Length: 228
Image 1: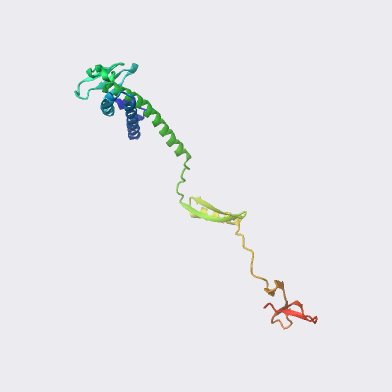
Image 2: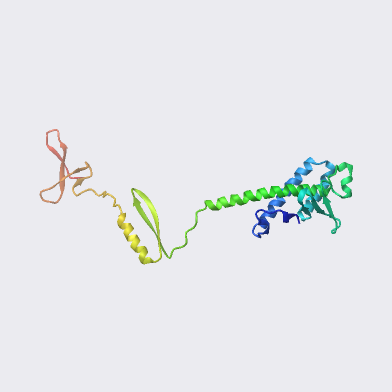
C-alpha cells in the first residue's frame, strides 16, 4: 500500500493524524496530476487520470533503489515492477514515449509522498506554535471575587482566588485597607458663598441672611448683594 510508505515520525500509525495525512496527500496528488497533464504529451493525458486512480487506491508500493511495484487495474492479481521502465505492453507505444499509466503513477506517488510529508510537517509546526502562544487557562477556584480599585489614578480590576471564603475575605480586607477609596472633592460651596460674584459673604447681624459689598453707586454709596 502506497500510503504505508508515507509517514512523519510515526504519524501514519497515529489515528489522530490519519485523516490529516490523507487529506494532504490527496491534495498533493491532485496538484501533481494537473502539472503532469501540462508537461506530458497530449496522448498521455487520459493515462494521467488512470494513474491518479492507481495512486489513490494504494496500488503503488515504493521500493528501495527507485524501484516500485504497481498493481494492474484490469487484473487484481497482476503487478508490474517498475525499474526505470515498465513491463506493461502499453509502455512500448511510440506516441506516449514510455509514459504508461504505471510509470506516471510511480512518478506522482514519489513526488506526492515528498510534498505531503513537507506540508504535514509545516502544518504540525504551525499548530504547535499556535498552541504555545495561547495562554494557559487557570483552574476554577473554590472562592473568587473581582475587586475594582483606583491605583495611582487608574481604574484596575483585580481577581482574588482562594481555597475558601474566609481566607478570601481576609485577603480582600487587607487589599482594601492598602488601597482605600479616594473620596471625590466636595463641589458644594460653603455656607454664605455668593453664587453671583463667587465671594464669601458676611452674616447679617440678625443672623437671618448674608451680604457683601458688590460695588458703589455714583454718589459713593455702597451696593450690597445678598447672593441673589
